[in-house]
Image (cartoon, rainbow, N blue to C red):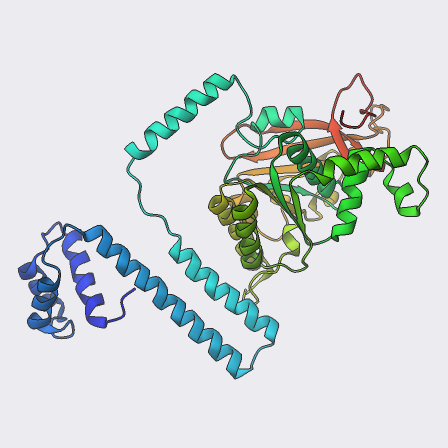
Length: 419
């Protein structure tokens, strides 16, 4: 933190005095420096006296400490910039590797800069009491972003600000469909600004999915160019609703956490985004100097949690699962937290972990044991919720529309678009 070695030695001696419970004054500081053999290296008594004369009072100590911290950040930035310049001149790495290393260095400086100071409890009490009063007045209204799935919202009270929400499943279970359904509901019904980072699908593919899901139009017919006459009014109506919804899409491939953070921060400042969706976590580009894929995923996971805290919005990140569910087989195929792919850090960093499970995907439309229809039945398993209960929510999956709906055992899935 210190530019001058003497200042570092002085500060180290002051810490030692404080840890022993001794007072800090010119005499005790001199004795501590002498005891450590650091007095001459710190500048001697003449320099120590000069420092005391420059700042004769501790009245503005907090302001002075902030100056020291700010200068420390600038020095770290200079060091990072120097290292980046050296990497670029040496030419030992590719431009992609140099850029990635540069992002990582600057990210570390930014993390140091954002370290929060302590806040006295009394400054937090009354805002919290006001929030509790609002909850009481609202009589059970959601405190987070509504997903549109009644039972899930009842279990989680919506996706909460500052939370990292992981939605994980095996391929083709409907991760993207579920995320887009949440996007549709939050943006259209509640006017929540949403940033969607699609690392796997293009913007055009995403828009087609949204149109089919919102308009209840068969996605396969649309892709084959075999739309029916009654599909066009549905698409037009869906286009009208989605066209006015506050949804922003970025389909940059291999996006790094730093680049995503920069884009999300800018969008938050310009449009007050209230939800960020990432599809999907394993497609993000971590630091190239990571020693393993597990370390790389851990870095990405921590970065997404940091993004949620910084923007004070929920970040929903989709994630692949390992092959463990299939390897277990039978009734044991339901996902578990240990199935999160490539890194246990995902489980640790996440505030909420949801798994999508569709028995139909493995056994077909009929349960082989009960002979009952399981066509379209999906389970959303809340395997972790840091501040709430876990549980399983049933949903209907309409594959032709790539759409999930609320489950009702006595009714078929809804066939009418949003009215």
